[in-house]
Amino acid sequence: MLTDPEVHASTPQQTTTNLSGRLGTGAIVFMVIAAAAPLTVVGGNVPLAIAGGPGAGAPSASPSPR
Image (cartoon, rainbow, N blue to C red; front, side, top):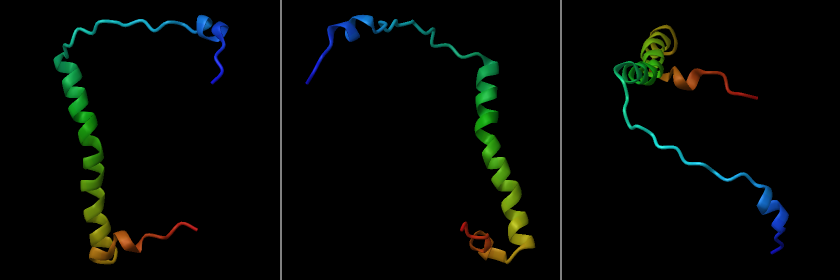
């Protein structure tokens, strides 16, 4: 294994920061809404695809990529 002392001397040192460990109400509300968004999309579109398409076979009826 080759090591170059100049390379190691020129790399910046990592600094550590202390996190406060506190989340405000706004941050928690934002995280809950952001996590629920994908479920809303699936919950809204899957029933429409089943009702307007081939029924329970809607996921298998999508066009396959070529």
